[in-house]
Length: 171
Image (cartoon, rainbow, N blue to C red):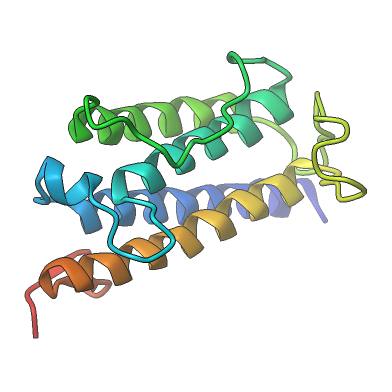
């Protein structure tokens, strides 16, 4: 891969990730704290819990794994958000921490190896470079955005309108 293609590929993937992150915030726009904190599916996660997980996941892969900066203790249950935590603070943290995480890795070459790896956490599975980490974060974010889209539809019938980049009215 040429250096120019590598930079274009990284920027394209980061732009795609940013679009998914905006989609997540857009999907949840206008929901009350109660709706954001209430589990809708039998698995028991809430929208706020999913956003908490996405915040922790993005920070983990970009800041901790790729830059080697440990940000604090490991989070065992990032899907759980206490009822006392306002949903707006979860959404604000997601937006802020994703921007910070992207800024931390934006200049890395795609073939940069992880600066730190959590030995023993993932068994034999390993991501070997920034391209693999970036693809993993993008796929996980997009997957969970789809989960949030389905939950939003169950809550009030609204879904994400890709053409217009906003919530669509119920059908």
